[in-house]
Image (cartoon, rainbow, N blue to C red; front, side):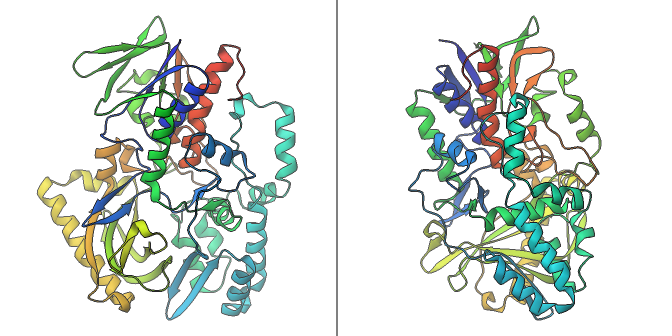
Length: 493
């Protein structure tokens, strides 16, 4: 039986392992941490569970190809329960509130009441969201294997979506927000994602949730990863924990195995790397093999920003609403190298895993990018901790000022920075997503194979901007399908 070695037991690595076993390969996963899941994880503090990943999961609608992938890898089942939520987000300023409901009609009516002078733009926004519902993630096979009929089928199901890319494809969220007269609507549009991102990213995000294809599985991110881990082991796969790979062995331009820190080597017929590409190219294999698309992205951080964050988790009394994501004005606060005057909170009262003794988890997330990572990286150990402590104190004050119901009720649980993601996940500049793409810049889309090294496949969220769980889980599947194609075997697994 041919053997595939998979580097990394995140969602992409687990997916690759599961599909490798389903295709009849011997599969071994080597993971540097003590548990599987990568960034799709969570942890406990003071008896509360803190979730790191899933705000909503693309691919929960049962009539989609992506749902079938989630089901195949054991992450979802037909009996999976989802959180009962009714909003995407709410934004507050100067005593007024705007909400993006899952009910689009309600969103339209309330926004028009808020700002009658924006009626035409509000109606256009709703129409764009309707078009964006058609955007479905291609999950049956990698697009480099598509034939003409596949593109025709996609065109049939996404007839209106090209209207968005044609009209808004080169426009940032910030630029689009300026079309509206009301300042709160402008703020609302810029609250959720970095304002430099393309507006299409925001529209697709909101549409996915509205369309029932972005629900929140109960139990949290870590449990989803553990279900995948269980599925892989049930299929006969093996995972080795606390076992970071030191290098990929390349002989005669072919990957033939991996080595570890002590010099131990393990051979394989194929290697699939699912770690961040900045780790793969330069550490595991020579950087000369890095594809040009990645070199351009790594060399141009302004055009290819990343998303990380400074985050704080608390417990608060459980009250209504239990499931809110709310953004509000705050007294300006410098975090990393940027100063922010808006901040969001997310209440996790929709799932018992986040609830204890009549209290639930509340988290806040302040976006960080390349420059902020450099700031955190420059601090000494003592100054790093002191800065975290300062920010926790300042953020606590601001939450109590803007949300009076939590005054004196915030119990600090944990705080983490971009360096946390780098330390635990080897994440490039602490990013928990792949590159985001500024408007008018070319997206990063890798075809999996590494030019100059046979039998090596690249998977993981860094293969396709902007990354995330859909890219991760499908890229593991696609890596195995590419191997099967080279062997001239059936790719439908």
